[in-house]
Length: 122
Image (tube, rainbow, N blue to C red; front, top):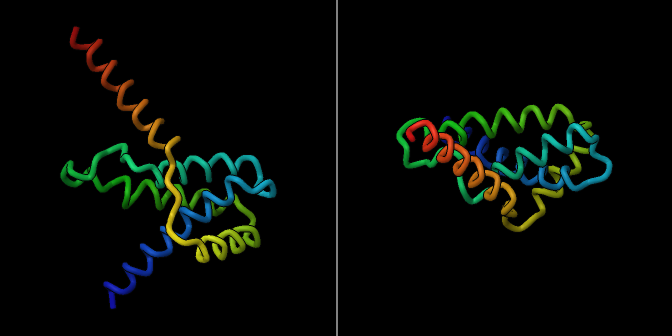
């Protein structure tokens, strides 16, 4: 029973990420919601994690905490009727999109942290 609930939750998270990706591109989405939805979708759909999963414990924090919290915030900013429409469109989609922009931002953050670390060491 608990395993099935976890699977359902994971399916809903995946669907909502795609719904936010759709919302970020829809002109009816309010500007603030569009910005949050775009940021959450770009990060969640990026093929690269900010904190790699191979790092014990904290590697999964983004997947288990940051993405769901971002989804909750974005969903609250989008009118319920629109979000229902976006969820329906997301459910109909085959596969999920990827975000190369999200990957580029994450690589940029990594490079910035690396440069900062090197400047502190030298």
